[in-house]
Structure formats: C-alpha cells, structure tokens
Length: 358
Image 1 (tube, rainbow, N blue to C red):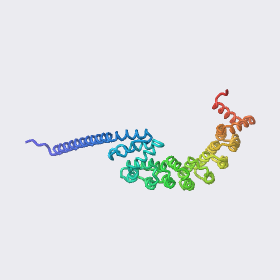
Image 2 (cartoon, helix red, strand yellow; image 1 turned 45 degrees about the vertical axis):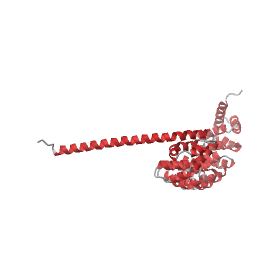
Image 3 (cartoon, one colour; image 1 turned 180 degrees about the horizontal axis):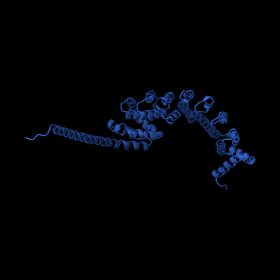
Image 4 (tube, rainbow, N blue to C red; image 1 turned 180 degrees about the vertical axis):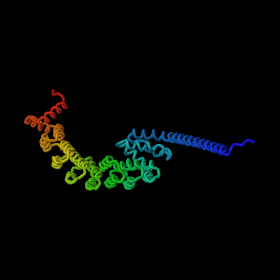
C-alpha cells in the first residue's frame, strides 16, 4: 500500500488548515461589512425623518416644530444628532436659540458632559463640539481636562469649544496647552480672542512666560481682541525680549492696536541697531497706526539707508490717506535724491490705485 511521506502529509494538512482559516476570515469580513451596511442603512432611515423636521424647524426660524423635535424617539435622535449638531453650528439668530433650547430640553448637554469621558475619542470630540455650540459655561472645567486628551483631534475640538463658550477662566488652560501638546498657536489665539477682554489679564501675565510660543500667542490674541490698554506691557516686553519671533509679534500687535501710545515703541523698534526684519515690520505697523505723528516718522524713514525700510515707509504713507499723501508731496517736491524718488513712486502708485480723475 502506498502512503504519502510524512513531510508531504504534514504539509498537506497545513495547507488545508490555512485554506480553511482564510475562507473563515473572508466570510467574517464579508459578514462584518454586511452588518455595517445594514446598520448604516437603518441609521439613515431613522435619521431621514428627523433631518427633514430639523430643516423645517430652522427654516421657520424656530417658531414652530419644537414639540415635534422633542417627540423624536431616542434612537432616531441619536441617528440624526450629528446633522443636528452641524446645523446648530451654522444657523444664527432666533433659529439657533430655538434649536439650542431643543437640545437642552432633550437633556443633550447633560449627556454630552458624560460623554466627555467616553473611551471612544470620536464620541469625546462630538460631545465637546456640542457643548461649545450650546455655550455651556458650566462645562468649561470638564473641557479644560480635554486639553490634555490623548487624541490630538479631541484637544483641538476642546480648544474651539472653550473659545465658543468664552469663559475667562479658560484663558490660562488654553495658554498652558501650547507648551504641553503642541496645540496650534493660531487656534489658541483665536479661542482667546473669542473670550475677549476677560482674557486680557491672563494674556498680560503670559507676556512674561518662559516659553516664546506662549508669549507670541498672547501677543497675537491681544491684537485680535483689540486690547487698547496693552501698549504699556507690550512696550516693556519689547525692551527686553530676546527672541526674534516674539519681537516681530510685538510690533505687529502694536500696529493692530494702533493709537498714540504705539508710536513711540514702534519708532524705537526702527533703531538702526535693530535687525532689518524688525525695522521693516515696525515701519509697516506704524503705517497701520496712522495719524499725523506716524506720517512724520514715516516721512523721515524715506531717507533710511536700508532700502527695504525706505520702500516700506513710502508704501505705508501711501496707505495713510490724505496725511500720507500730503507728506509724500512735500518730500517729492523738496528732495531730488532717493527720498524724493521713493515719494514720487508711492504717489504714482497711489494715482494708479485711484484711477484717472474726471
């Protein structure tokens, strides 16, 4: 009787086993995909009616249909909730207030606070987003904890939500998140600007932070807020700041804030001993400040030995309107050398901007 060699029999058994395993895996994968498709279709069917009701409710400005939304079954509401949250973030006015009230009456805020600790980061992020749209100040402390979340997406959504809520106590945690997790600086600055004047004390304190990115972000936020009383602490920072990026942020913020108190520190930043990039930025910011005092300083800079500073001064005067035009004409008429050339070029561009005169 012929028998297969032992090695061949063993190999055949292994192949049969592997084939069975592969077949089983394929069957499981197909089954799981089918289950997901069926689940998604069921969710879509459940969400279809509530979505139509939500759109009709918003279209009516929230005047009618609140009771219909409150009667939606929990399963159907869960299916439609992502669309409802997105809608809450887009609408404004009476419709937004009415929709937020529907969320509140359905207990959505309480449920969202509970979901901030869910093991699924997508659930945590959605909960944070909803609380931000609802503007719930009592959820700010719980959201502060999410600034240290293991998920970068959750951290970003939490920062946005805190800005939307606008509680002054959130300013320090937002600034602290910059150094710990590399939170995007522009996102933190915008969130702080949404908090508004309530964030200014924390921002002034942050100008003395050991981390340059924190100082620069605080400056950016002060400029976005328009904190006019911040010229003095920013000037003090400029006198001692070692980091070039922070110095640039300081002069740009002074230009955004404007006002007479900004002229002196900006003029000091134009000292020839300063690096050229800072001098150019300070010149541009002085043009944003505007006024007769700024026009006089900018006029003197047309003779600056650094061509970039002189050219920026000419363009800043060009943007100043009538005070700048007057100063440019004075210099163009009285100087035949480089200052006069810069002035004439700026006047020519100004005439091009305004078009032919009738």
